[in-house]
Image (cartoon, rainbow over all chains, first blue to last red; front, side, top):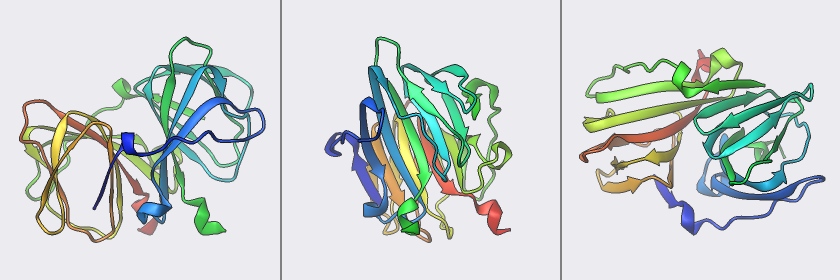
Length: 117
Length: 117
C-alpha cells in the first residue's frame, strides 16, 4: 500500500501546442507500480486552457474545485463545476478552459499509456 | 462527452461480509461507455468500515473529505485524510475504517473488471 500526500508531489507545467496556464501532478502512476491506471490532478488557472486535441485513450474526469468550460467534439461549450464527472471517449476532441476568476481543478484519470510504448 | 452531476447518481449500499455503514456511487463506469476504468465514490460513515479483503485488481484512491484509517496487508493502521492518494496492489489485503465523527469520503478507481466476465 502506497500512501502519498499531495503537498509532497511537485507540480509540472505540461507543454503542448495551445496549452496555457495549466499545472499537473501525477498523484498515482507508473512510479508507484500502477500498471493500468494513472491519476493526474490538473489546475487550469484563470484565463488558461488545456489544448484542444484528441488522442486514442479516454479521459475519466472528476471536477474538484472551481468552474470551467468543457468544449466537446462539436465545439459546444459546457459549463462544469465541482461535483461533476465526465467521460471523454478515445479519439473524441476536447478542451478545458477557465474563463472564471478562480482556479479550476480536476482529476483526469487515464489508462497507463506507457504500457503501450 | 458525457457530463454527469453527482446529485443525480443514486447511492447504493454495497453488501459484503463485514462491511458497515458504507455508501457507493458509480460516477463513471460501464454504463457511460468506459471500457477500461471505473470511478466510484465511497462514503464510510462514522463507525463504519469497508471489508478487510483482497481481490485480483488494484485500487487507486483519492481522499476527498474527512479522515479515516487504511489498514494494510500487515494489519498496520495508517491515518489518512483529504489530499492523500493511495495505490493498493492487486491481491494486497486492505480495509478502510472510520473511527472519527465525520463522514470519510474517497474516490476508488479500478480497472473495469466487468470486461473479464
